[in-house]
Image (cartoon, rainbow, N blue to C red; front, side, top):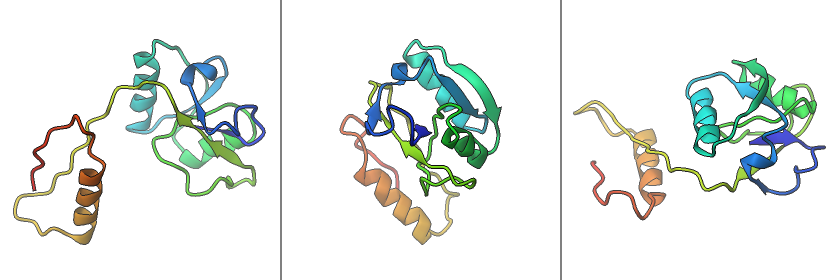
Length: 137
């Protein structure tokens, strides 16, 4: 989640979604970002106040940087500085949220590329303890 650097919660590091639910949401309308945001709100029984919708990731960051609302992103921005020169703060959600299922697939017989092997190693290293012990190679 991102807020403008000038936002009162910007320095907290973590935040509960309900702390922002009454403020304007800048909705990133891209797959799977929109569905993820809707799922987060629904799982907590919250209703967002969607004021702006965009399919452009950087426009969402620019609107947030200008103080027009907050945005829920599924990826961490590479820079806190937006294209139009404003700064945003990243906040982690501290709500008790349902876990997500992540899978990694490749066509049978295709070579294991360096990217595939690196991502596979990352997923195994970060596997939740309650997850299935069997991971297909």
